[in-house]
Length: 485
Image (cartoon, rainbow, N blue to C red; front, side):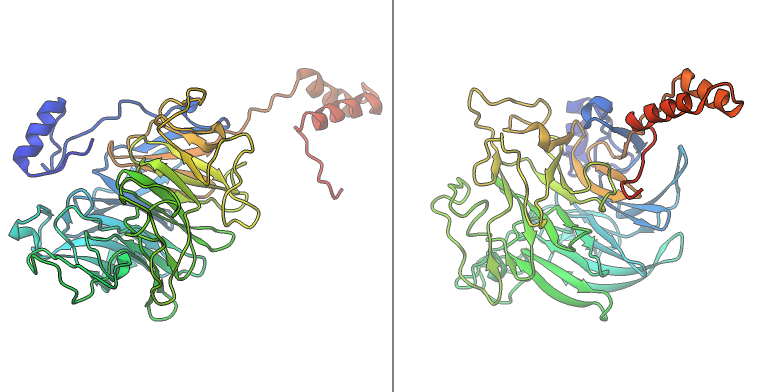
């Protein structure tokens, strides 16, 4: 459950839930009711809690041996290091800026390149962290901004503003998620901000209504919303409009093999999406969510392909949920970098705290679904179940094939990132950073083989007997012989 608001409503909500108010007076302190353990993750993997003292963490990235984690409401970038079995959390944040915060706004996105760190946040121009409440004048002085920072080994310094957007006060979709591409390009997304204009595929009849600007529809100026942008960091931070028609997104990820960009998108009540985002992609909002030939109750009538806008082309999502699960993070491990799942794409959700996994097809532009599964036009999760459908507890009542479940029981997943052959998971509602790693099987060598080695070395057994022990080690895959030998 999300609890945000002014102090009076926060205290009331926290008292009702029987939990304390956080020291910053902005939220309640949540403790996870269920902590992920071995049985909640795929066989051969284990979950470890790294740190649980974060306040509404949104996203993370790695800079050298540092993990930088964003706190949504405090405007802080928290610096964490792993030292063997120990976790170092620095008292002084790497950055602390003034943000305007609420459901969708605040400190939102981070992407690191070898030379810089990029941040996306809703900047409060009042100089203090400010609650976003529609119609309250003190919150109007804020913008969604993208900044470039230098990293000095301890702090983020020398901010340079790269891009500025409006920041509506109606709990509208601010987007903010970021990711880095194979050539150090940076991608970031902004949601629709409650608008119905050019980038929402309504160029023929745009309607912009902006807090403290106008109270009725206006066609001018055109506000940049519902889009994904690309920063060419090796060409003076040139910005390209990469995709349009994005209702809202909490997940961008780049395939480390192909360099293709993927996103997650959130429907209102129906048809969350996973999309392959090629240059000039039009995701369809607000004409369509989910496959265009599907009946979407949120749209209210027949969905249609949006009219052509410049060079942007609509395509159906690669996968959809029928009823929303609130998909957030999307990430793909390096080739051979996460055990048996190096060719799989991972997605986390907010509503159920589940991590899904989907095997990529041969050209890594879609998914290879299990033949036995009853998938219909890539709309694979439905809460309207046939009596014969198996329900997997902890992931909602979905048509969920075992092959697509990786981990569950997190308290609202906000980010997933791979680093050094490990998966890192942020859980926003209990303020926790987790690490998921492969389990190295324990190798047990029978005593008779150990004895044989000693006896053979002292000529107490013949070569044939010793070779038989080596054959046992090979047949049990304790010793691996390369195929080229």
